[in-house]
Length: 420
Ligand SMILES: *Cc1c(COP(=O)(O)O)cnc(C)c1O
Image 1: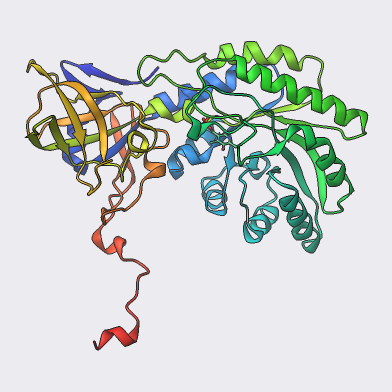
Image 2: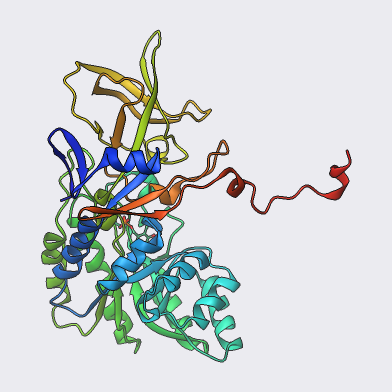
């Protein structure tokens, strides 16, 4: 549940009026609720309290330092997928003993940095990567703790772009060949095998795929045990869905109740990598109506945020609820809410019934805390927009709006062009 609600017809985040923040920081901007973030973390972490576990927040969902710090302060770790995310996690104070590193394309430098930082483990996605990690670790005269990311062939029944555990997926190692890979790993001097990892997809709305994937992975764990390879960490990834429209995803408690019985009697530390479920409904994107336009076939509401700020509608045809920041009694109209970017695919909503809008109105794009700012770009030379965190009756800018100067930072005109 979240902390964005109407008070006297005006949308508030916790106790602060959204319009008041818009006045202070301008539009568009992202807005997060501290209370929602903290209570979502407690719901996930608490659901698995009965077993040794690490709640390693999937940094890619929303990588702002303040949010990483918030979860670290509540006992969270980090699931990272790049050297940049490692840098952020360390800077935010995430304990290195709770950092796990996934991703199909880790390069040598990133691997070396993570080894120097003494992270908990690498989730390895291919045999070649395993050999590179082995090599880098030996050069550092250390051993890298690893899990293999296995692909259990479970259909998560979600959008194909966010399904990751099927046979055709680029992620992980086929579970049927995993034993061979583990046997190889066990012979490498720079490698210490400690776990098994899987992550089958995102925005799952049913517990069954989680249960089936875990059952398959546990069969592998037993086989590994028969071969003298002991598994201490069992990483079940993230993927728990959230309500965007009328989905009814399981609660973290329901997920735990379904999965934990499978682990009974096993001496393992469970690793969870929740992303969307922690941050998705803890954030909104606030945008201002610039123009309304009557087309031949459609009515458009042109707003000041676009696909460069929130790409999910364009990329996945994702649904985000849109509501006026100030309640109105104007009659509803069916509109496309579109951004200023020079692309036909630049929309936040299509064929959506909204109370009719006027220039200057503020709109809230709901459930935008996950894969929102994190996927933003500067396409069309649009500076990155601010992020704001509300706690109780106060708000804090946790990322300043970029300036035009930020846009060209690092660019250079070579001398031969200067005199032209
Ligand atoms: C993206 C990702 C996650 C987080 O997924 P959510 O659906 O946001 O919970 C966790 N683990 C890995 C390996 C990922 O790639």
